[in-house]
Length: 138
Image (cartoon, rainbow, N blue to C red; front, side, top):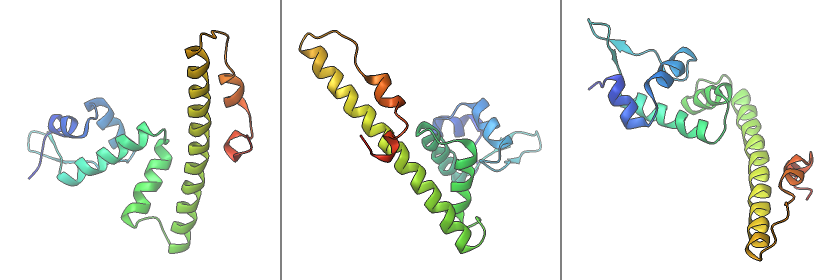
C-alpha cells in the first residue's frame, strides 16, 4: 500500500515543503511516482520521516541525521567505521545533555528566585556561555 505526500505529511507531522527538502538532502528516498507523476510513499517512509522529525526536534543537523540513518540501516561502512560513528554521536549526545541539564538547573534557580519576589536578572546567559559547561565542570 502506498500513500500520498499529503497523507505522509499528516501521519509524520512534517510539512510537505519540508518532506521535499528532506528528499533533496537524501534523508528519505525519492518516492515512486504514479503515471500522473504523483509521489507515492510507503509505511517505511512514514517511520523514517518520523525519525527525522524527532531528530530535528532534538537539534541534530541534517548531516548527523543522515549518518544515523545509515548506521541504523547497516549502510555505514565497515563495522569499525560504524562503531566510530556511533561513539561520536554518543559523545555529542552527552555534550547536549550536559548543556540542557545546566539550562534546566539555571531555569529552576531563576524560577525560585523570581518566586521569592526577587526580580533581578539571573545568570542564565553567563551559565550557558561558559565553555566548560558541556564537560560537566560546573
